Image 1 (cartoon, rainbow, N blue to C red):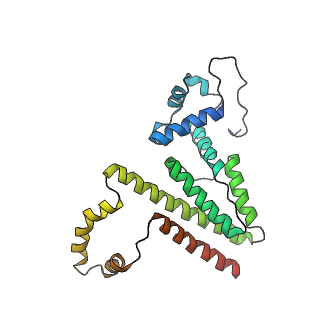
Image 2: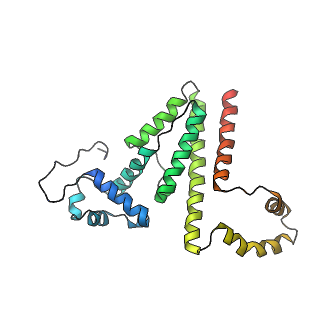
Image 3: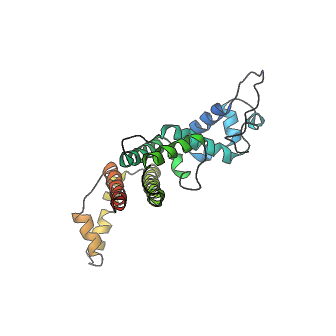
Length: 226
């Protein structure tokens, strides 16, 4: 029986009441502050001021706890809009916003499908918006959007982490490594890269994300139109 189906232990007359929601909320707060390495059943129990053994019965393993954390965040990922394109854009926007708020989410999405109720509700909203489109298009289309969003979000979070680790933001990094690129491009070995750096658009993170997403959605729209 998965954690979503398993009932919680009955209430007990103890000084510190406990339930799964409290456990998950405490775990998310730890992860938001210090990353997933800060999350363990022992640390969560300490944050709740209870003994570690109190958590068992509510949650059996750390993997279950991580699944519950991801599903809790998906309560805020509820795609809306008129038509499949607006709904897929809403899915992308809300997933990105959630990952910016909870950076650890980028480390947990993209693997096997999440099966929690909030995650399933999000998927239901997307598929319902594509009702009437052939499933042979719907399935790879939704997979393509999810793959794009996950990749883009992970890149953004990796950049954030690199800024913190190096103490340099993107502009400072470019200034530091600019002279190397100037010397390298002067060799004439990389003319296409040199043209891109000198003449190409320099988009900020938001522009990069939405432009790339529009490329994906335009491709889906063209395939549906066939």
